[in-house]
Length: 62
Image (cartoon, rainbow, N blue to C red; front, side):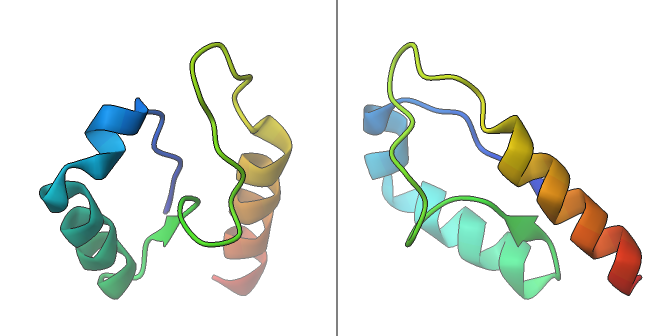
């Protein structure tokens, strides 16, 4: 499973958000967010290439 959160900067600052990302990653979900990810602010395009690459990688492994 691959998750690509799309949220505002205010939502990303909420303390529960990082805990949720950690929980998902701990359960084996690939979460495309955080260190190494470019900031996706208001009006930014959805990172389709990164999302599809992650899905392809997950399918190839699984």
